[in-house]
Amino acid sequence: MQARPRSAPIVAMLGVTVLVAVIIVCIFIVLQSSPNYETIMKDSSWIFADLVHIPQFVIPFVLICWITKGRLGEYGFNLKQKPPIFTHWHMLGLGILFGLLMSLKYVSPIIKGAPLDILRPVTSANVLGHMTFQWIVVGLSEETMFRGLIQTYLMKNLKGYVRLLGHDLHAGTVVGAILWGAFHFINILVMPLGPVVFFVVVTTVAGLFMGYAYQETGSLLTTIIVHNTIFGVPLTIGYIFYWLL
Image 1 (tube, one colour):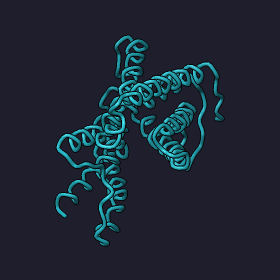
Image 2 (cartoon, rainbow, N blue to C red):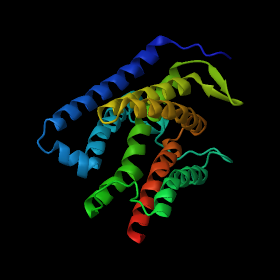
Image 3 (spheres, rainbow, N blue to C red):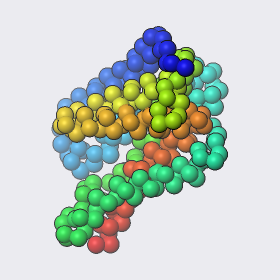
Image 4 (cartoon, rainbow, N blue to C red):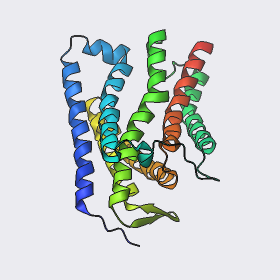
């Protein structure tokens, strides 16, 4: 079956995406006007990261509560699995695998005796802040917005599938992945254009795979586990190497 997207659901979810992006830009502008802005971004960047992820959870969660009249399980807040592939343990293993692959970036500095590429300064507050963000906040917030609200809503209101690598991706899964990737243009606030474009492409592709996993299980826990683990593992390993070496 060919995808036959209807514009209204896409426009609605695009509107949510734009609204959240505008709020994040406003947060950035307010923070940038603070005399402590440079210090926060240099020494405690997790504070900014947490602040901009708050609307990514709160707004979608409120909308999900309103749409479902409190039946949150319909929009991913459940413990469903789909054996044999899409189980929580398999998703954890997949996240750890990719996290370990990302941790290979530490090999060259260790061999050369160069400083490790980790978030500094390494203080108790910063370690706790960064670890909390990567292991809890980032996955919970982004998955609630893009898989929980946007993808679920689109899957319920769009028809059709796209065949990719032998799998049928729902039109809502594909559009949701595109919106998730495009949303990462927001990183232009703190990153050069080149890395931002690369990140947009990577997250769009990742969104297709994670979206398919969510499509198959209907559970946000499936993708939250992968999302948090991929970034939490290398962060944790980096700190461990820092303390050991």
